[in-house]
Length: 220
Image (cartoon, rainbow, N blue to C red; front, side):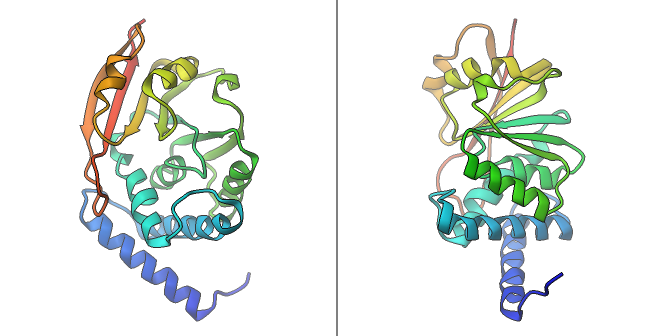
């Protein structure tokens, strides 16, 4: 096993301290091991992004806020044990949530091979045994047991999410849509057979703009 250079170790520690500071502004409880894994994940994303264009956010400090904190802020709100993150991109919010909940299972679904290969590398590098990256279109993916929660972040409108993902939840499962502003028009356009069960306004330190978690369940 190769040792990190002093410069890289210093950068690691600096990022850990920055993330610790951000988390201190929330009600989240994060262990040292989880902090280290979150930082390692963002460092891998920053490195891969230069060649594979995984995200439009280029600066690693911005990634801490817009990718890590914006994902883990909903960790206490998950109900169940099995989740699927649809249109996950480079693993957002699924990988940060899997780090926060090592006893939960997460399927990370994306249609682009380069993103899935990156997530596989993260799973190996961070020893995340509770994630399964899958390359597939969401409407073509099936699971025999169904999921407790279908998670969507910047994936599609609520109407399209429900249309494409309706077959993925189990009997008591729910849909969790991470949105910016309160999506009044999207909820008005929600298809029959579904109901809004909760809207949680989220506070993400240093993130400009509104954030909401929308819970939806089938009424059928």
